[in-house]
Length: 96
Image (cartoon, rainbow, N blue to C red; front, side, top):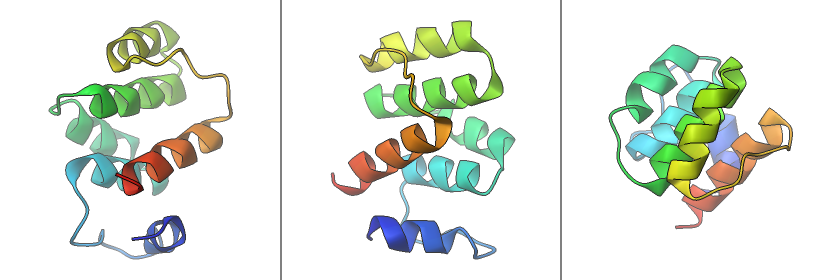
C-alpha cells in the first residue's frame, strides 16, 4: 500500500483489511477516532507502538505522558506539527 492509498482509504467507512494493528491505530486517528486509536495502541508492544502512543498523547495535550512514550520509543519528543508527525510514522510503517 502506498501512502496516497492509505490517505485515500480514510474516506472509507471501514479500514483496509490488510492493515496491521499499528497502521490501524493511525488509520483510526486519521479519521479523528483518537479513543479507538489509543485503545489499539495501548495493547501493543515495541518501539513503533510506543512512538504512536507518544504521538497520540502529544495530540491529546498530555505532554508528560508523551515524553514518557517518546523515551520508550527511543525518539526525542517531536516538535513538528501533528500532521507532519502522523505522516512520518505512516511512511515509516508502510516502508517496513
